[in-house]
Length: 532
View 1 (cartoon, helix red, strand yellow):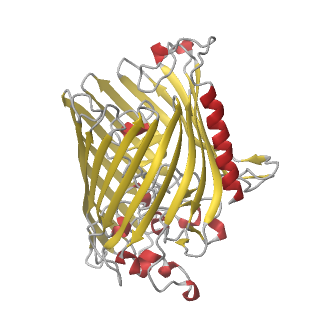
View 2 (tube, one colour):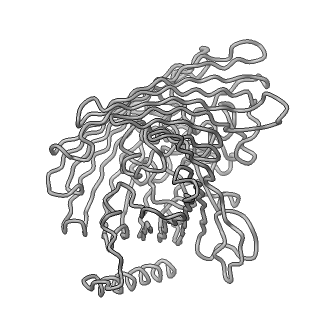
View 3 (cartoon, rainbow, N blue to C red):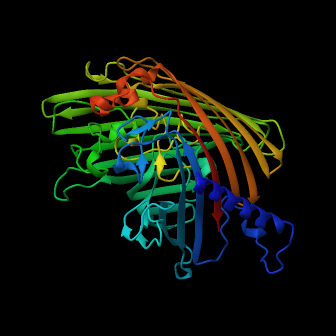
């Protein structure tokens, strides 16, 4: 715990230093009001722009991965193949850090019609490793570690006003809005809220933005195996949104995945695709069948809406989506399974004060489940990008810290529910959040209560997943710089009596719990700075 205390002390000293000059004007500062009136403030007429996100947090929790292979980084559900387990005798204490630099180059020679974007990721845990190479570590004594990871490198061409062509390695989000010109808050509150697709993929996309909406289409190569064979995974998408009224937007989409890879490729030894071990890592549904040569086709047909999202017209807002997935898996001996399932979400917000932080939100999420798997030749649950990536979606906008994932993570992303299919058992989940700006735009208190149950029971388990309560406080120190303190606890239900849910199925007999796991809890202190 000593290094946690030292980190807390460092944060406190930083706060005091920043607070002392909070009222002093900067006589050398340029008047930047004119370029901060945009949703994402970028100064005009700059060829090279640097944007970065710096995140550091001290964490303590009673859950952690047991396998040494996952000590540096773990992305997947708690009690899954990641070996993340809770404990009543041991707890963690560590500090982790993330730096995400973005570079945008728009040469004047091209009249501002061509932009190169590049973003990278540098993650580590304080004191983890030195004198080596690899991702997600490098903060040991003397460092000297090569750990730069590529996120995006893509080019945007604007052939005419309102039109854009993007190609390269780019963001692949389930949003109708421009993924590079939209704030994270908006991405998590519109479209499918990153619950189906949120990752980086190589491909090409086209979009047209007009006065009352936008349309876009793209094709992405998720996994390329042997270049001379048709054994790849391709994602196709078409999406649009239209402002039907001043406060009301409605949209729709078609997504399609064609997977001829037979599970080759993917993350490490886990593979990828509906039959892979990756699904048991990410919390998606795993299709189990004997065929080794098969083709998967899945189509998503969806619609979404949002009303008064920013409380512009009055103190109520509402958003939601409905997404239906259908398809099949064809094996060497005929059809393996048909796929039919859907997910829906409704989110309501009421602002009772003068700032966006004075609000109450209620979030409801439903996904269909399947109790008998594909034994009847049909899977009636939901499929998301987590079948092909780790992670392939980011359901971080619900408001929980343990039950569903939080965005305040670096190397240890291990919620109870990391995929909205919930192992194929489906979901009935609700979250209520109350936040209050004690000092407007400065000190914000918030509390969350969330409950989830499955729509199908796993073998030897029930349907009650759990109940989470969390409480936190945020201090907005400066513009786009804040500190957050939060604690969360989950009371597990009988869903985790099932060996497949509690992880007993993935370990040797002598390591099995034979009972429901210990209730997980966590607490953290985080420093965040989005810099321009």
